[in-house]
Length: 286
Image 1 (cartoon, rainbow, N blue to C red):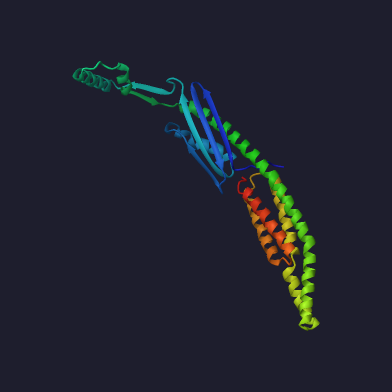
Image 2: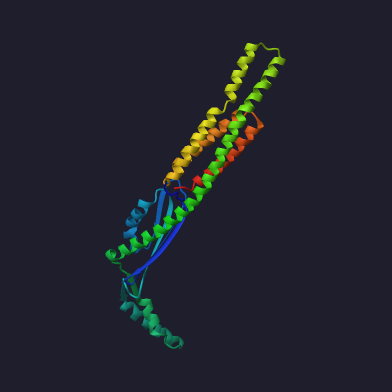
């Protein structure tokens, strides 16, 4: 029996190695297909296809947003350059301004800061393994979240499925009685109109054909069985479950049209209500 996965999840991981810290955060929500969006600094764009491949191999369905950040300890991974011409020009301008307005000279460090260029240069071979390790760890946390949520959904879905089976059993027990009552009412009405027995038999046959719900109830039970088997097989199964739910609703609608009594109609209303509740949950299953 496989685990059922929700499409809703969250995972976060931070890994520091050799003065480099990589932070990966990912969240997922339900989506009809698989969509992976990755946001990362420009200097890490080289890692995007690798990250996408890792996630795509483990996620079948849902929208996944991934955020990747990198931090360097000290000057690790950075190239520092002082624009000397800019620094001298700034200093000369500041000295002239200070002399003109009669104020003391500012600290030289503030001038240097303006002329300092710090570029981040990344060692792709060194950084990529750290990014992928953080991605895989965050992904496992996301999958764990989705699995735990999916198992909670499974318990509730199976509970509701049990209620559907009880309602169909009730419908089975009521249907024959309802048809017999409708048959008797029709016979009484036709006799009052003094219609011959052959015509009465024909009208009853037509009515029975219109009101007979045996086929719909049998098909519903078959759909319930297929649905439960699919749920217990585990994800990915969301699309298949959605298809079975549509078939359930189709049979329930036909059952409602054929209902020969108020009691049976009320059961059909309960059936459709429970099926719709399950359908809402199925929308979040991978």
